[in-house]
Length: 298
Image 1 (tube, rainbow, N blue to C red):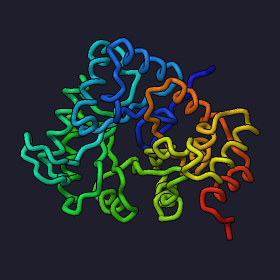
Image 2: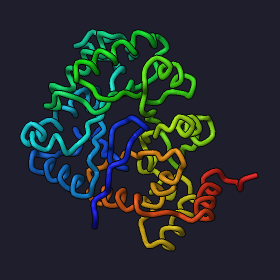
Image 3: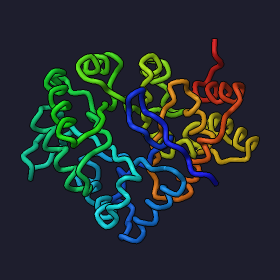
């Protein structure tokens, strides 16, 4: 099968694979170095070259785990794109954090990037995202921080995660952003109707999507029996898996979203790659929307 090609995340944004591999549970997968290398190389062979990280994944351990592979294979850096996020501080007594909070100060963003680079074994991130909207976010300060990181060559592009349209617009008015990474799936339709996807299409910015299979619940009939039956019907008609249909449904959004697949299973990577080649007809697409919402469109 021909490997997937890269796509621009925005008019002037990075070239990423059409789906990304998420590693937020890498610390739970039990990979040794050989298994990690096999998983990464399998993704790369499919054309899934973008890897989604965050500083705090795995209790601030997952970037270093992935970095074991990259440090052992430094020549592969030019073949992959590294995305990371920062800004969340969970309670950690050893770090003096007593309450979960957000920190988008210049000092924290800068320190987080430095730690990510060190753990991953690279001298730059392809994309840095503010992980959650911070009520104390100073747009001018964050923009200045982004600018310094860019000029230092440490981060090439910037975006946000879980921002509302108005929160996105505020920061984008100060500095060019290339994505908003949000939750979206057939079990979480909010971005289709709350203005998030509309804004992305308006600005020609592609959103990244976390939990596109609703944490696996879309594969469980108990989560929504009617929806699961509809997915099985379309999957049978098209000769693909339920997961492939659910991802293809998202990929047909006009804002051209980029789903993130967070699974150690090689078959999950295959299903994601297959979704990039599957186009549902309009009636199939609306049949799934109807099943997900529990009513037909008005």
